[in-house]
Image (cartoon, helix red, strand yellow):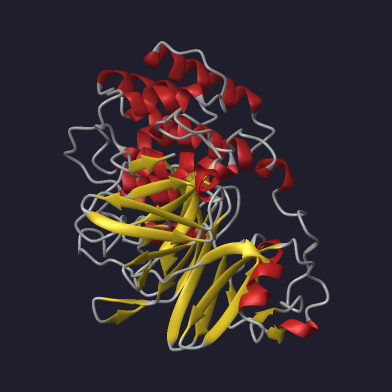
Length: 410
């Protein structure tokens, strides 16, 4: 038996109990056994108790198996044939049609799918086991959580990052994109060229302790306050994705929080109703931000990490096309995938998305949304009367996938 199968099997055997109406977790692992008697027995058992939802488990294990046991082509081929036999599908292993087909089915997972998921992903990083303990609660489809290609905090967050004065930031040109946050008279700029390599900055702006999350895949920067429900959280990068968007985790409970939602959806905090508040952020150019806030601070290139922080170096190919790196469960053709929208969320109202190209035609854009009069200035800042309300930008595909009820203005 391969190293991958042997180690995983031992972990699964420790978690297996009798009396389940569904196949044992061990049987999924034994599909990858080298001994014919073992994998043939597993196939018989799985055939007798097969449900469509089991396809996601086999596929997930196949994809991880390929990452850690690249030389075992015979086993991979055998399991692929079994999966095709059970599903009637003949897609290639990494063909996105698998995702589309699985997500088109009613969600009917194995009762211990979450536990299985953690044990499989622990072969990529043992810390992922903590995200999916036995009995883990999930408020989202577990088959829509995928590995993003990095280990836990493999994209390292910036923690209390070094800042410099605007006049010292000779590495920035006026045309470079920055994400600006202002609070209590203090302004800070987070250049896209730096934040794209870290996707998260744990920082304080004015009186606000923030986790500034940048989901590069869904084009969204959201500064979240670090507390909710009277609890303070410290967040990290899980290495996992949900609907092609970043899943962060809190260090305290190891619950998973989808970036766009700001709520715990998997783990001990799932279903508790906790909701992170977000602060206003502006996506603009360094020239515009510096002119408005001449005393602004900005990220230093001295981050403690060695990266190519030159403009456009990170995700250049991804940002330059409409193609997605990971599949999503739904799309909406009213805008192109990566068209930018400004998202406004008002309590008790449907989310509002305004096409940025529409906003850029006017310095001030007025509209009404479910009875509320809004004014958008400089394609970023949203006001209800004289009060500024938080808003942020996102790629259209990323937002509408998770919030299909969104009202679009274009």
